[in-house]
Amino acid sequence: MSTIGIDMRNIGKKRTGDEAVFFNLVKNLAEIDNSNEYELLTDIVDENVLCGIKNSLNIENKPNFNLTSLETANRFVWNFWTLPKYARKKHLDIYLTQYITPFFIPRTTKIITIIHDISFNFYPQFIKWRDLFFLKLLIPLSLRRADKIVGVSKFTHDEIIKYYKIDPQKVDWIHNAVSEDFMVQDVSEEKIKAVKEKYNLPEKFILYLGTLQPRKNIVALLEAYNLARPEMEEMKLVIAGGKGHNFDKNIEKFIKKYKLEKNIIMPGFIDEEDKAAVMKAAQLFVFPSFYEGFGIPILEAMSAGVPVIASDIPPHREIAGKAVLFFNPNIPGELSQKISEIMNSSVLRENLAAEGLKQAEKFSWKRTAEKMAEIFKRLK
Image 1 (spheres, one colour):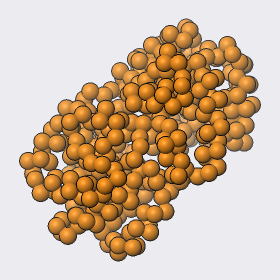
Image 2: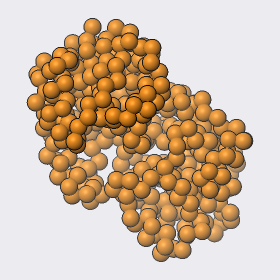
Image 3: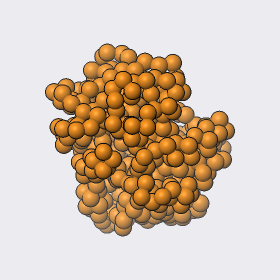
Image 4: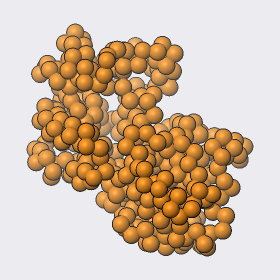
């Protein structure tokens, strides 16, 4: 039996991808592992929020899963002082986090860090200089300290080894998946009508859902939509996601430049319980990123039976196989052509939807949790 600490600070913070990974990983570990002791560590102190997290993770009746609040001034104090102190007190055998590993943690604690992507090395122009400084400084140190590095795709695994010259034996990979909660969400006509009213969505629309950072290449989607718009009549474009950290201000500039205010709907962050219905309501889902480590929204759209167009980058090929249409992310005109192809062919839409459903079934958080449990076992 091992005592395993897991960094849960992103749970409840609306951090999209990385929150989804840790939430679903822990939820499924709770279903399959009754032997190891788990210390789930957060900086949230609100008892109501903590209770909600326990309920959503289904750990109320799991005595080997303990959610602990470690209040701290900021994330640096957490890494330098709060977490190392707690690790010594609890004699943690393993500590699972993401990206930046904690400092001064005892060597008896094996550290695993999950790396979602290393896009900042290839697209530094899309990162704020302060963030880039810390990433360039701390990631190499963290990878050296980590006992195991885990990418969220085979592509990310290979990128880490190649870029940082890491021993391949030290690096592993898992796959993300669609959460069980997403799969059982209500997508009835009544629910779809309700979410359209809630988020002011149009009758027919193309959807992007995710963060609004520059590397997501949303400006190319806007350009492609503007090119295809004359032949699509009432088709609108919905760009869903919060204007959070590192928001791409070129999105708003482009909308104004091409006078698309009446055609573009930006509903902000979509509540988790509404996501499946919003996906289902769309005629088409587009994911145009320059760089990803994985791309959970592609899987979610395929699981909802919605045809998908995605940028032609290695992780998207790894995820989607032949179930989506691909385009060169540097050529908006190519994306525009793909949009027109799908919108003008009901047969193509139906075929892509059917292939997407089959492809999405290949990914499961339970299988991912089982692989992570094996990684824990090998580190003992």
